[in-house]
Length: 381
Ligand SMILES: Cc1cc2nc3c(=O)[nH]c(=O)nc-3n(C[C@H](O)[C@H](O)[C@H](O)COP(=O)(O)O)c2cc1C
Image (tube, rainbow, N blue to C red; front, side, top):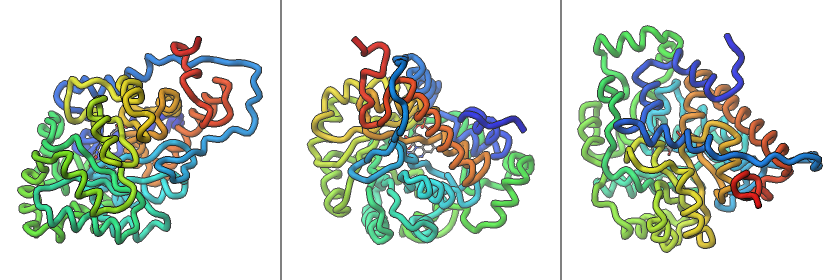
């Protein structure tokens, strides 16, 4: 096997080890995937400022996100169906994040439940909430996250209706996979994945099944998820969710300065500049291209985080330089997980940490807290 040196190496390995319908689920964006590509491409357009003969000893990437200490400004983004990239994926990724000293965010649409993840971790993780029409279910989810001592609620705002992703439609994506000849073939060609999946009973949406009133089996689950995302979600809803939750709140999916201003008024602790990894509004700008405008609009009022297109530690550093207090990674950790389970998530984090550390040093900085626009070539005087 070739050496794994960067995130694209992990991606290549995940492609070989994860059944196509789930690999494609991660590696896809809406419609033309233009925004998905732009998220990555726009990072490459930002150039760094090389400095020399600066003391580069004793470097530190440690900082805080919403006041919580993190070993580097990176959190694992909430991703649905993570337990289909690898058996018990959410539990493994949460453990890897905990050992690394960074936040793990569990998705509402996860395979492992809030309680599953709580049972294998010792420190608090974050929980991402989708607001469903069945309000009782939502209230109950918030209460379950509280009971599990989650230390932040990440409220996703950009999925009131689902963007269309062609690969998922063509593959007939479902969790667990249906036993059609196509799905059976996709699984049979990934025997390692199958063996591990047979060793767990966590193969469907465990935050939902047994908790939402009308969901008792798989067929009712499909019907329920298809119609449950609430298209009427509004800024008013943020108020009652904030009140019911009563803890640190992060608003995810802000891409416009006007929305950022509205978000800052809610009293939330942070926003995530995000276009859902290019999976929702295809044709929207990349997250990194919108970051400076959003920082200008609200940077002095609310903590700003960013996700979308981060594939290296250099990308994290660029986001921090442009004003993000923290970043989230989705696909990089999913590729690590699909490639090598928990060790793969740790490896993805190691790769990003090392790239960030060396880049910071070569830009003449020793502490992530000192990284600002002056490390970027275009912004330097
Ligand atoms: C496979 C996959 C599933 C996702 N599921 C969710 C989800 O359940 N909830 C959510 O808020 N965001 C979800 N997202 C979006 C991520 O939280 C994040 O915004 C995005 O992945 C960041 O882009 P990146 O993958 O380029 O790092 C998902 C992303 C991917 C790739």
